[in-house]
Length: 246
Figure 1 (tube, rainbow, N blue to C red):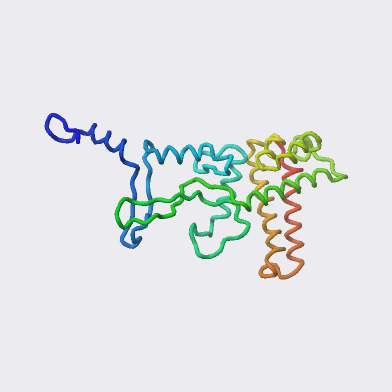
Figure 2 (figure 1 turned 90 degrees about the vertical axis):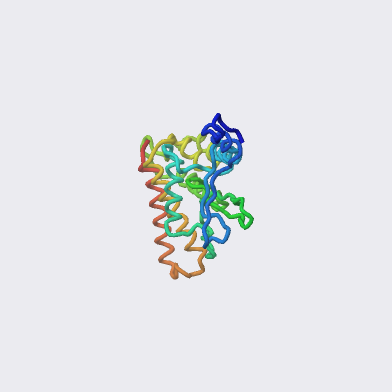
């Protein structure tokens, strides 16, 4: 070890050793039986660099950092959607999750350096990834958007999403890339908290409607409940497309 003139390890040498060799801090407990309870990565470690690179370029893989300040419409929507879906849901549970769970925490394996350490799945705080259900629901919702704005008999107000999508070129642009981000950009609502809320309401109403037709009568025991769910979805869609203005 590097020592100073006094023969003791200098603070500078200690910091250098930690920065060059230490990955981070791993915590466990007697009740955890070798598993990780929580861990911290040092910014200087290669593991932290690799994880940060994954998150920074994660949008292409459906990975988003919702812990940072959300300003864009898509970021505001994802934060609200994750909070809505995770309010009463444990991170790891033996109980099966809803088939319409759209966002899940990003998970990494962490293993301590002790002999009895066990590789443990840990959540990356503030980072989520889109599930397969997200892409399915997203495509279906954008499909409903396109069919709704092409109905005859409607005269949308200026600066609404419906008015913007009266333009055939913009509708084509959205149909070629039916994503939430493209919907916000095509309609010029890329930084609108009101649109983020309206889009969230459409998403929730649509998942409720789908659950009504897929739960085999466990919750929606009569057709009237399904009709109410359809009405709620139609109303939410109308508000999003014909009421919110940029």
